[in-house]
Amino acid sequence: MSQSARELRARASESGDRPIPASVGLRYPWWRLVVAVGVVGMLAILAVSQGSVGIPPLTVAKILASKLPVFDPTADWPGTSETILLQLRLPRVALAGIVGAALATSGAAYQGLFKNPLADPYLIGVASGAGLGATIVLITGVPLFVGALNLLPVAAFAGGLGAVSLAYMIARRSTGTPLTTLILAGVAIASLAGAATSLLMVRSDPDLRPLLSWLLGGFISARWSHSAIVLVYLVPAAAVLAGYGRILNVLQLDEDHAAQLGVNVERTKLLLVGSATLATAAAVSFSGLIGFVGLVAPHVVRLAWGGDYRFLLPMSALVGAGFLILADLVARTIVSPAELPVGVVTAFCGAPFFLYLLRSRKAVGL
Image 1: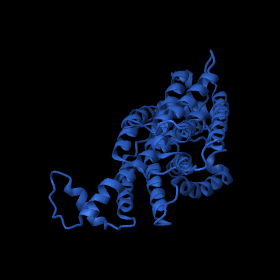
Image 2 (image 1 turned 180 degrees about the vertical axis):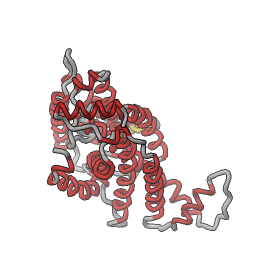
Image 3 (image 1 turned 135 degrees about the vertical axis):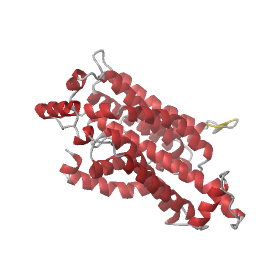
Image 4 (image 1 turned 60 degrees about the horizontal axis):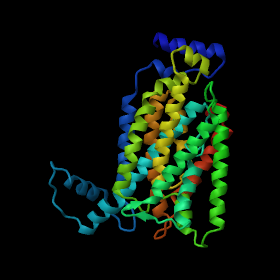
């Protein structure tokens, strides 16, 4: 273990805070990430092969290979299979994986920043703000399209960012931004946005099915362009979060110790909150509100491989992507030809796991 890692662990031990993971000074486990990427790829192939029209995994592989310039397989599959795969299922699975990665990465960052195992991507108002923005577009008579621009994701994105920005401005002090105050401000803003959403729903047309469908989450209308837009925001946000993995390890000490070790605590808070919120708002703007992904995925990684945030962040993204791909597969096949909202599936899977974590105090570190 390096001298810096020993110093961090010694300071944590002296202060009584949770110690920095022993893996801080160890070799980075790249092979685990490679295996996880392979597993997510296999889950994606499984997901696109299943549905009302089955497409064998081998045929899926052939169709995908036919789109690469170095392969020229014999086209022995129906044209409808290629259309279903490339225009319906692949965009849906891709968006599910990207949204799962965004929510899980943001959840891991929030848990590290707030030093709270109960933190999730919606902690400080993103979900309620996005829900209010979507409600305004769907039930107040605002045109859904302006030219070719769909205002629903734009309104949801703006609502999510606006709610978090307001909470941050309320919590901000001349001496810094207390994290407890930020959480409480976020809860208050979320309650206000939720009340406004409920009021609009009560006073609206009786047909609330489009809004409820969005609020419960799903990928029915997924397009390749949606994935591209989310990636525009997710990639830089995830790069910032991954770059701060070592600093998140340091922040598991108290803020004074982190500052003594050279961390600009206020700047770090702003960057982490901003990046995690940006990724979450971009994800929910196209998927709706899908719970438990950002809460459960980081815990699974932490229980299996420890709490080193240099590894926890990227592995959480992969676990979240795989989890949401599977959840979407269940949502569209378990009651076929009907379809469940994906948020219902993640709640049925995530809630029991969360209750188990609450019972196992050692597992969640409470």
